[in-house]
Image (cartoon, rainbow, N blue to C red; front, side):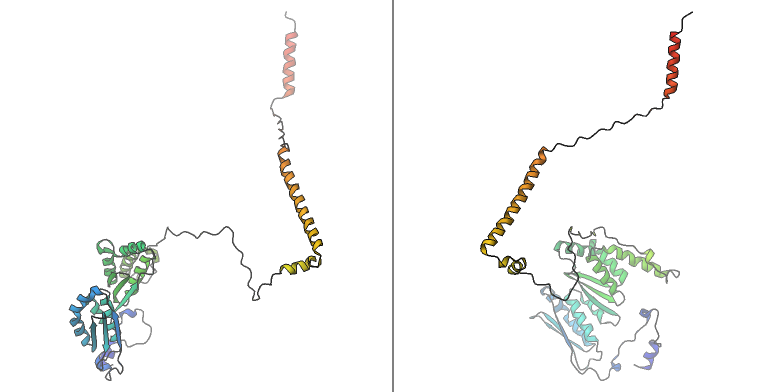
Length: 341
């Protein structure tokens, strides 16, 4: 690196608060005078409907890549695009950028946008969304929600993140600065996980306004951001009967006793055939008697009289004074008996 470029670049190696503000100098041919020793190549397939577009724009692709000493080949028979380094290529990372460019063009990104990935401060990200939802109808519905009515949701994401976003088939192609690509990926993944993109769009708008305020610039913004709470989350039903896990032991369970072992332990094995039959008949009779006893008890329950409920007579409490009442009655009787003058 020359002295003039070192003066323009960062002079300190200590940690920087805002690393995104640092300007990294571009890689020039004089920085690698010996060029590359080995050839590197990448190839990618493209669908049939992109053949006419790529065929018409391929001279422009070759012209752009020739400036970086990269060879581009288009095979219409196999349906593939290939990029290769040459002995004149000085930038070792430009082949990766060229690979991203042909990948984006195979995913229906126009040439005017795909060529931007060759810049040092621009990168690309292809997000696969087919594995998020198994149901085809839900997948189409959530993908449509990401685009929005007449593409307004997708346009607002592009304006807030400063990225080019294209939804095509089962992938989402994003092209923009390194700082903004994780934001686009998060919005896409949340949308496919049934979180509406308006929440993330609102959060980005609030963050942009808060970053302009010098008082709130270095404070926590959690209280200003919208919180998403899903109402469809249902707890998993627990079984009524849970099997208790036995404690782990490295030893295998003991071998179960066979029928002969049980007969030997009970002494039945050494009995004669007649004795075995007699013992078996005795056990069978005992079982029959026990069953007959239970049957008789069940039948007798119908003739057992029900218990009568004894109604307790409650003594009525009165607030009448009996002594005073007797006195009044006697007084009245005396008045009746008294002779009339």
